View 1 (cartoon, rainbow, N blue to C red):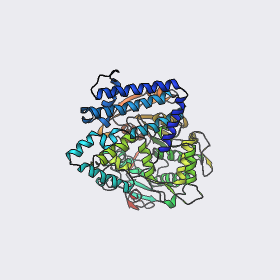
View 2 (spheres, helix red, strand yellow; view 1 turned 135 degrees about the horizontal axis):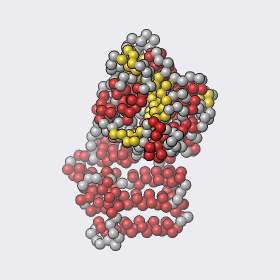
View 3 (cartoon, rainbow, N blue to C red; view 1 turned 135 degrees about the vertical axis):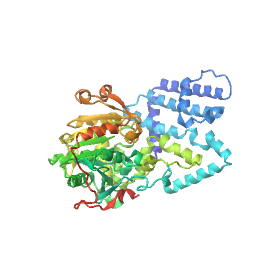
View 4 (cartoon, one colour; view 1 turned 30 degrees about the horizontal axis):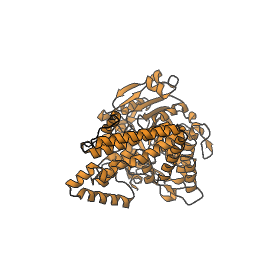
Length: 556
């Protein structure tokens, strides 16, 4: 992704704003000069006229890019790291002093932060003491290995984040036993083998994001949400979205809602004999699930007794940093690229993955550039990063529609504005109990934005706030008893009493451990009596087509 034009626009916006305040601009320039002079005098051992900056020194001590002792032991590298942090802090102050409108400030802050992060001395071999020390100890072998790894990544067109040879879907990822009982051109439906003699009568149907593969919820046995749900006695079904080939580029949002979600729910009801299911959607899978249920409600159908939404936006009022990529010009360009009357095309999963990685560039891009390309280190095995690199391409028409109706125009929050096959949708028409989970540090679905869904829905609405980010906040195994979550059960957390996210948080109680156990207790109350566990191999109407994990998850 070429962000150079956006960075140039951000610089122009900042410069124009500061030119209108010449006194502020001069003060900022004078401050930066004085601070750099003080740093330089300290580095060369001369008395500085300005006092040392304790805040800057504290920032340097906490920054993981500069945590190695070599950054502190040599005055030159100590100067480089503090100069970088000084520039970063100054730029943040300049943006704040420019008093831009909120949209322009977010745009400027994001792209200028990307620019200045890219200039960090940690990102270049001659100015990174760790890289130089390693090269000296290995007689240059580390640099040679790094160049080789960089060349390999260039050939494959993607940055290697993890040891991809350490994992294989079906061997040590997505290994929970089950069978594919349905397949169409969009989705496979997996029915998992129960782990006990009985299950709750009402099945659980999981709708994962269609931007990545489903096995984020079925990684390894120790952190598999699917395995946990089975152990709680739920009868579990999982949608596995297809990695859309170019010929499916014409498919629409309503195709995924009807032939993906609603058809899978229908089959789960047929197999289980239950009139309703418990549905669960994660991220954009939750958005898709909610629109599908609204479409069913418009037809007088209510197939989900309960709906769990994990890190899901229904109101797109504040989408966080991803919004800097989505303005009217960008959406219209996307619509021209994926014109429904033109040759079908898809939005590459690899491009989407890089876009999301750029939101946390220091952690998800530059860290690997330094470790693998400059230091020549071998990638370490990490299942989450393997999944993150295993993207899924989307039909271009669906993608362009999603950007306009959700991100740009925020239509779903307004009853009737979103239409699927000509049918107007109203989320309030869905008859379901709701469990809404958000994550404190989520940079893709800000938790206060996820909280806004409570105002768009009817029925009981439990809201829970998990620790950590978009993935680690959701994939937090109960067996490890890590992190914490906030919940406001009963009247204390009711929508009538907590009308803002801050008011809700003030009323909520903190609980140690994983939200999984809280959710399981909530869902068991809505899952019916225990019945004999189904034999997934013996259903005559939907016999097994393949063993789990199926075919679609293996397509790249």
